[in-house]
Length: 217
Length: 159
Image (cartoon, rainbow over all chains, first blue to last red; front, side, top):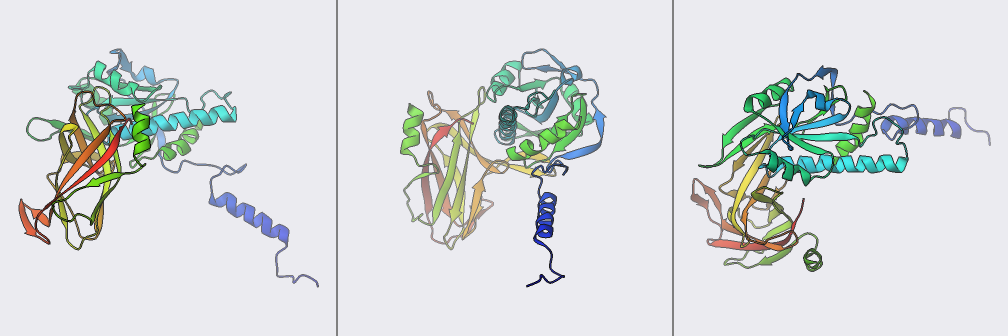
């Protein structure tokens, strides 16, 4: 029995299905562009101003330290029991997963494999976050995590340049907390602010987007 | 070894050991996770879910723990990308509803740990409830009268 002319051939159906799948998911079909799904990419990279903080080794931490390597910046403080450790944990886990993916894909010939980024906590609580405290704290999250802080003026300067807000607030009669932005900022190898992850954060968001962000240097 | 023993004895999510001066069978705590303080830090944190299947509201007035000198209820308010933390005096759970203590929201701060307490040890969280809803320290309605107490045990974990 001849096929009615208005019905598509099996080949046509297969091609249509393949195109539909490629368009509806980001699974990396050849030629289909993959884009960050969770981070907001700045229209133009924003150069960071010069700044001087001190890291957990009490060594100067300046803009130059950010050159040559992608950095994820998060402003928080060690007494923060909730958002800060959860975010650092997610970032550290994402870094580990991306390193594993790179190793398994044996594509280590790229100059900057997806797991090769540094996580930096900038403490907005310099009064309590001494270098010793910061050192003990970040060591808990494994390799590739560092911390820095400085005078309130220095912190405010770099925070303002990046659109990050923080404010010390009383907590009871003799304690205080620091309210702060929850964003994770992506700083490129050229020390420019390139993209931002807004809360709520999830490890899988970082795992998906970071390789794409790092590939567009 | 201690960690393994605790993990073997305790189911993954919760172990409930409830005793009550009133019937608290309508209250359940699940998904209890207690994290030890991070290095150099004074407070650990605990998360859980509370459900109230009764026909009356209950108010969580306090949480205590034999393993911590102080347990404080706090909440993180995330609004427009900004996180603010504030203390909670009490928390009312409406009838037939529940509340999740989770990252980025209500949480318990576990402060002044007992000497020698370490990851893998079992800690107890004691929830002190009253039936009814409190507003400005006055009970507004009282379904059954009387206070309640619910104890939950969980292994102390490392983040």
